[in-house]
Image (cartoon, rainbow, N blue to C red):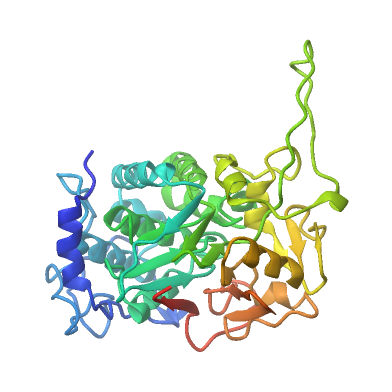
Length: 423
């Protein structure tokens, strides 16, 4: 299997460099046309109804019709047109066919090829990726929780512009669960990762785990859509989740992660001879908690289906599950049963210790903030939680009208993301 060359990506980047990307997505997708009994004829592109439209910043669509079913490129190299078609097909399918018909437009064989290619890239990345390939014209777009809201993801890409050499994206995790199109959303992001591996960074969220996906809907979504091949597709997704990095540092001064900061892990007690089968449950006492180092973060074992809440590998759980607090200090997150709570003093210490200016984390939507007195609500999709001498802490949530298929906890006028210029 072949992946894209730098030459091909550079050529595509020049075509979409100043993109206000060819996406037009309805926010009221619940009023879309009722599903057809069988896969309809591929529609003709129409700027009033299709995702893919013409603009002065984007070349014309690759063809006059959607290419259905989607096939894997014979040379194994994705193109901008292939990704455009993928997004358009998923948008069209979400409005016109039954979920069980998804394999008719996106066969399992194509799924396997995409996930394999993306996983090879993701597993090679460190736990904390350093995003330093920034020029004077570079923009970095940081995106919070998406939770399977396909149409909002497509609208966001239209609003912010497609990834390119000078437009980088950092996605802060929670791509799946609670929304109806977690699989399609995740696959679109994997395609962009394969096509622009140094412009698209996919971090892990706490919902990219076996436990959360089995409880909050993603497993059921996949089994419904791919029926007898559903277990295979689900297992492949879990394997890909294990390869997602945990955090990023953008331009040496901005730390992003799904949950937040993490603890220092003292050396694990050595096993006594002759007691190889005895398990050692090791968790630092709350009174001894302190902020960890990036060396510790990069040494943590992220390839676990569910980050542990006890033992010697607590850092992944901290990064994915922790929450800020207005109470000073570092303490166990008893509400969640995993991760930490940290106060403004810890934010200041973390920023100062690592010469950072900003923390951008996600993890909390409007519903979560309703239960958190002292912290700002999520009516605008983001809150500035801590303002300290060394910088700021921001919580970012990019899923409007969340959760869309339960009682809505809040809505945003536009889809929240953060643009970082010249970090």
